[in-house]
Image 1 (cartoon, rainbow, N blue to C red):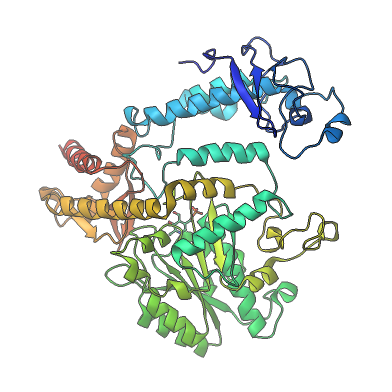
Image 2: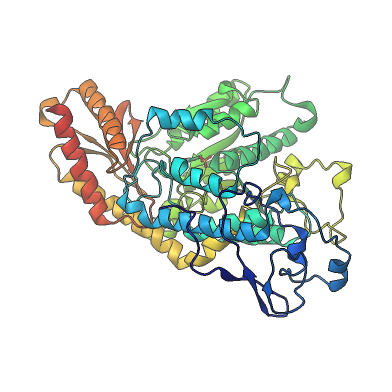
Length: 568
Ligand SMILES: Cc1ncc(COP(=O)(O)O)c(C=O)c1O
């Protein structure tokens, strides 16, 4: 169905004036034939901020009669030029209509997801169309662009919106998060800092995250970043800053040349972003020691202690243990309590990568596993995973907020402000992280956290972990399936073991790899694979708010059927 259909009611309430009066905005029909109309812009023309003179149906040609934002005075608007060109050629009437069309498209997409394949591979022609579209010389109408989004983009989703998507730790978007993302873009502040609402809202949303996972609020600092990888990189940068300072050198001035080799410890199951961070920080692979895991895929503290001893004896400088609260392959939670003790004894920075699993602490059946996480120096979170905040939304938390600032603060003179004066506000976020300009990620997080509430989030985490355990039970009952790890959180690892291939490890690896490819392109259910102790494992990640037991039954049945057809 075309998104270009006319709207049932062309008179909509456009805005609320500060006085509380609603004004009505007459919408012209969208005109695909008129390319000067309907170009999408995130900017609001200033006349939209003019206070209404009276309650009236607005004539779209009059430039002084559309709604205002609260807080403006008549004097301000009187001085404003009346004939500014519309932003990016888009009249606000067009903006409203395009936004409504986009909202309908989003609603249709979300509502119809279950009826569509989880994933539908693109045809070669479709790929070429997207890859080679030339940049238009002339402006293109908004409705044409929206139609292309509907037909060329929304037709080929990644799949994570579907309740039978078990591929990776990618959740579906919370609808209110999508709405908040749109509003954040329309508002579009830079959250580098300053005395405006978005900055305070981010502080609040980050505090809520701290409270949810039991991270100390007093004296600490956190900021939103693109995802778990950048969150860990940010935190590990602070760890590097501390060790250098403790050893009498200023790493920001002197760098690493001629200094002892810094060493960080990561388990075999640690996420690749930890290794990438070490490389970016100039440690190189030599600066990362990979610690073995036990039979539950959790870091082995005695092995870690041995490695630290070896490194110290060889003149290297151990500085950080990067543990996981939920590994990406199996959801294993490292022995955080023991590691916190060890880091305390050895004076090592204790970082926890909780990008996927930190919220598991909310499940009363699991909270014991997280003992010690409250003693970490830094924690990486990823609200775009279990919380369903639309991508991108990661969060770096650091216990010593001043040290985080010392690691990143570099304020150019043109940005110097004073707290409480002018645009100053709170200390700027740009002093606490790598980014200068920063988007308004906080709004979607703030909205989603409130909509779910602490209880809703807890229930979601509990339900997913329960579903994972139930899938494990189901798999154990199948003769031709093998459970490869007891699920700790909401990831289940298993493989297909048809009787005639039992014991033939290479053939089993080959079959299970082919199963992943087959099931992904078949579109009925989506899983991924991983390596566990050198063997190939199927991997089902449960993070969708709508996934139910029947979807798990369906998954097991599909794996069984697909195995039959691949081995027939
Ligand atoms: C345990 C863990 N750490 C870090 C990351 C990286 O997070 P992001 O992809 O948001 O950068 C992931 C991603 O899946 C993860 O599962």
